[in-house]
Length: 384
Image (tube, rainbow, N blue to C red; front, side, top):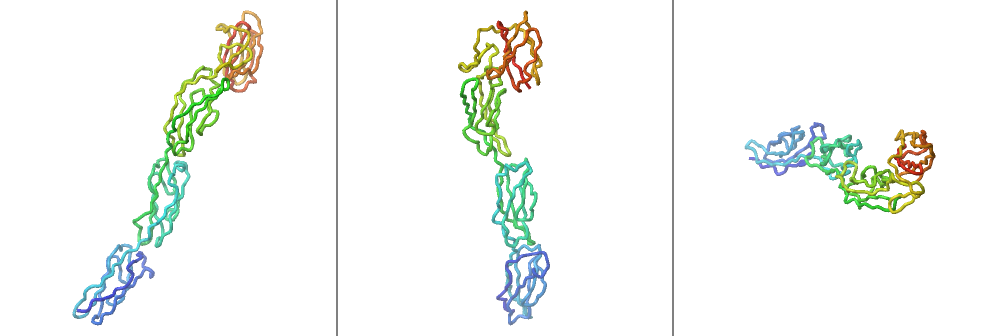
């Protein structure tokens, strides 16, 4: 039998393409054997002989079905066929991307129509890039390129974005990944109350020591009729209860951590507040502050439960009709006082006659203090 070929040369690492263009033709060669008259070449599946069968040199192409295998050659003469010489040929896929850059906490872009950009590096042998996104994330543009824009629906919670390199040889089975999350705002710590000053300028503040994890602001609520004067969204609020006519207010002060995609559980402080409410049973004169309650100085007057006073409409967007019924014709003094106990103005009305007052008042709540010198009555009015 002829001698076995000792050499088989050619590319052992091929870039396999389905195209039959000349750039995809590969050459394999063996050495001449003195006793051989021809050479028998064997090709694996997916490799096609172009020319050279029986010679020391062949040309072949690799189609897209090729995965792996060996090219082999034997020397031949009339006495027989030699042992085989082989060369393993590996299908060359594009290189795996090594970087994937972009925002990992996507909270600020969830459910609001904004997009985030993710980018990978160009790699050898790749003609395009195949991206995949988790549930709730969608590729808006850039599929096939090294950079994509991704939008996030409100259903997104977490997941992995991945990119693989692609060529006409196929898709790289390995991928580069990046884990995406949605940060959840944590619940605030304990709410700390603080009261300072004296009526009618008593100040109520509530605070938390630090911004909760993942939160960008704080949403506060206070019991009615409290009003947040300043600080909504921050760590500390200032609250006014000046519109209250009750001596005490009970309820909850609450705080929640908030970010672009979540609201935390509620932190609650149960409160019972002593207000600066203006007493209905007051005396007319100059307002002073004694302790925590407004007091009025003047000659003693009796608080009346029988003094007949009619005020309408109430609330009013313009003036108030006031009629004070009395057994005799008298000039009746009516003081208009705000809820901090400050005297706004004084008017005189005739008893048993309809008078119109308050057209010049600003919107807000007030107390009408009506006194005929012997009896006194207070009526709350609201100017819209």
